[in-house]
Image (cartoon, rainbow, N blue to C red; front, top):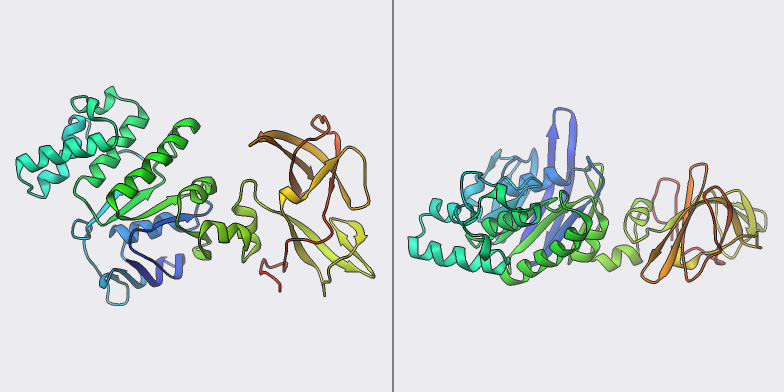
Length: 353
């Protein structure tokens, strides 16, 4: 349904998006995830038609909607897309029903059809009781539902979300994730969702593109990114909690891991980064044969288990364990490693065979 070919957006000498190519099928829920400044919102703006590509093309189905080389793009109103911004951007002088009805009025839909469609989408979002209220009379979560209802009212084929949940509290974010997925299934539209929150990405997406510095580090299903990260950045960005990367280097018959000599069960030709999953680490209050001394930072319960974090200089390790000794901030804590890492990366971040 949506394909990008060598998509690039430059601002002067700076490339915010660099030669990105990917494709998602009709009805997919693609999440663009990455840290601030990685280019994900710029990509979304190009998909919406708010920015012209500097190079490359964007296609919806068999129709090209933007062509950077030719310097043209189909205007936003003619793309059959809907867009929800981080700010709800509701018209304060219109009621909830009026906000939702407005794009249908612009589309010159008959009055009786407009009323029926407004009633339908307000009911779908569970806000039909708010139809006669104004935006300043409802909560932030309700305003977000109104913005989504307004977006889907014209039945666009592509739904675009630019960090729509970032202004909500934690509990409401979880509830709205469920609502958005329900809306996605009900409309059957192809959805593109921008976020910096990898939890949202992993729980909502059928496809994920992890971006860094304007490039796609990895594209695929959420489970694949966690199970087989292609780069060190992906390994430490996705997952709850993400994987641990520990500096490793060969030293005779042993391996140096975070400065600690250990019996090696894997081989290296030179310095690298060893990936250990948090659930494969254990923690103790005394040193062991394959342990790394750290300073206790924090512990928190996660799904019936305990997530323990320790720090030492620039190194930060996290273990997910069934039980852990009682620690206080600053106490010594020892992270015990399994015999072999789950993956190895070069110091540049590329995965090693």
